[in-house]
Image (tube, one colour):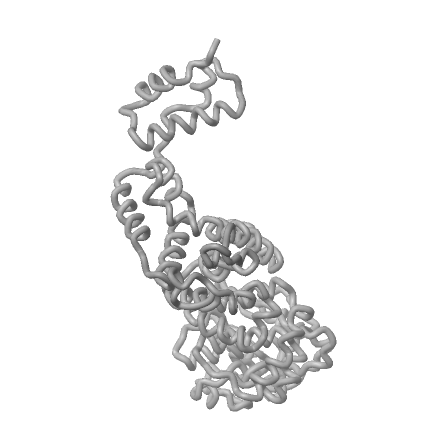
Amino acid sequence: MEATARSVVERLRSAGYEALYAGGCVRDALLGLTPSDYDIATSARPGAVRALFERTYAVGAHFGVIIVLEGGAEFQVATFRSDGEYRDGRHPRSVTFTDAREDALRRDFTINGMFYDPVVDEVIDHVNGRADLKAGIIRAIGDPRARFAEDRLRLLRAIRFAATFGFTIEAQTWEALREAAPTLPSAVSPERIRDELTRVFQGPGRVRGLDLLSESGLLAVILPEVEALKGCEQPPQFHPEGDVYVHTRRMLELLPEEISVSLAFAVLFHDIGKPPTFSLDPQEGRIRFNGHDRVGAEMTAAIMERLRFPRETIDATVEAVANHMVFKDVQRMRVARLKRFMARPHFADELELHRVDCASSHGMLDNHRFLREQQEAFAREPLIPPPLVTGRDVLALGWKPGPKVGEILEAVQTRQLEDGFADREEALAWLREHYLPVQ
């Protein structure tokens, strides 16, 4: 991709325009990371950009942004600009096309405000970003209050960059961030909030991200259900680590580096049903959270719908939260139920949720070990083999279509999963013996 990005720059330069790599790709390259994309800043106006390249489309031509499609990749090519007044906490009302220095000064953080000239191999730094990158500092360009007032999404971006790179947020930038935190939900779309949270919690810096969200006040306004975990005490015999928030944070620490989106949020939300179900047994003096898994699943669905997550991600996360207490019963399950439980599409994530749930609290991993052993024992054949009997076979015996047919098929499958049938004929014989309809 870099070679193609360079060719885009060279074509702009050959036409007499200034053109440079800009923003995140420069930052990542200086950190020794491979950029995921390349943004290009140029003195060429949008019309000139479109005239130079065969395949383009405008995503914000009035802001000077054109997408160039070249070599199977997309490149955002933006005219150097300064921004006019911001009115909605996200977008400028107008822009003025200008030069590279002015363009750098309107960006969010110094580490994102650098340019790179790939033709002469030179970093162009008008904002002292290279020094901050070396020192591991997230610093707003210019007045941090003004930068956050212009675009409230920058509040979450600051958290994400600090979490991702393990950087410190500079003191004045942090103070301004905390002051502006309560204003974020009214200015930023749920989809944008969702995307930033996903990058934080799916990434390896998720614990630092949670800490920064909490300390900044952003957690309380974005995810008040998680904020409510603080101070929610738990039975010490099962949770010597502390309250529900401490427990959840510890679980995030124990996750592997690479995880799915649904696992990240299942860990974050698995116990959000505890504060509303908290009770103290007056006779035993024991803390209880009756039905917290069911309540937590309902709350999880509401949060993720509020943040406009895709339905598939919502369903997987809700199922994990709803089932996380079922794992305590796996060693007492009948074989058929156990196989059905383990055959569900997101079982691997749920098993990992169970592992970190136990490891972060009482430390008893016997059910986890049992399930891993069962995975090995069942590995020689499908957990749910193809059915030997179908609904047509049941109807052929004289049963009428209806719920009873499903019950019979489930009974046959249970027998198949537990005791097995040699073949279809044996299954049909068992079906005739046990399920001939009453005449």
